[in-house]
Length: 84
Image (cartoon, rainbow, N blue to C red; front, side, top):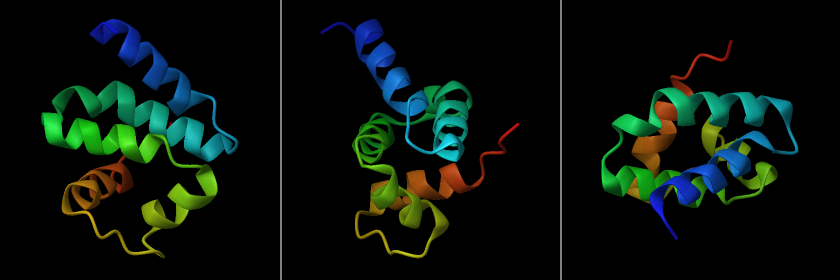
């Protein structure tokens, strides 16, 4: 699968969520921050984006700890995203 197709699939997963807040947060992150991530952070974001909203939201809020250090870095970046 080519990179553009992978990015389009990721964009779909980030903006077609069950929670509007997640659509806005993940979609904004994908557009503004994702291009600046290291390859390891990008892979971690893809893994996080594959989670269901009910599993991801507590990680973003910080009410559930993240044991993966790279995912924890990405979650910190996600918390800093300002939703318009």
